[in-house]
Length: 243
Ligand code: PGA
Image (cartoon, rainbow, N blue to C red; front, side, top):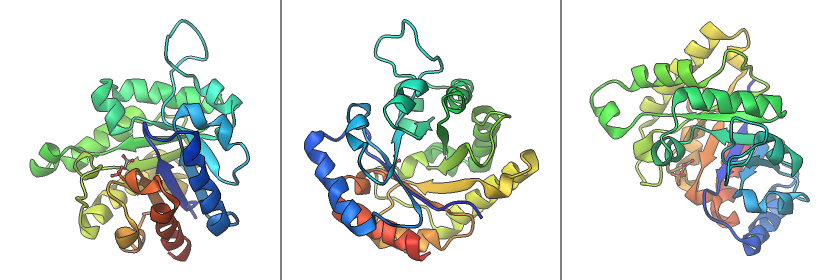
């Protein structure tokens, strides 16, 4: 069975004072039997040392060290306690023109540092409306997921770009179609394709989480806005625990 993961992506949000949210979350979910992953800004990773949750970076460089001002390596994330890293988030693909090949290289860097790579994929609204969603997914899976990937080292997050931060959510049929497609592609390519955790992301909230988690091949969520407070994230975690 793929492991269930409730992942929070804080993006460029969070100061030291925000860490009190994690303590509240710990009171409620400190001994949960699903994985709870928090991806705070890199500045807060070492301060998360005492939480019972898994901690992840939001991006990494392809290299281990070197003259790359402002970048952070997977090795550095691991050094301060991260066990995961997000790669290929649509905001990185858009804001920093990241390509599938770069994302595959970042995933390899994550593996080398002993991190689990959460590889994000998803179509734009234009691609959805032109009926090319599954082609886009195929190209991103082929280009962003390294041949060396396996279910222990890699999580796939399907995040339709048009659903991120917009309050718009695909229908459960649309999520089922894409997640089923991703599962089939991974199973063709990898011996343990059935074991990869597949997360849905894009406007997940307490009010829609249970419906989304009831969809076949959805093993959890990658949550942005609703992961920033314990009050908003807790019902999502609870829904996944019950799914
Ligand atoms: P959202 O973001 O939950 O705020 O839509 C999801 C994400 O970007 O991972």
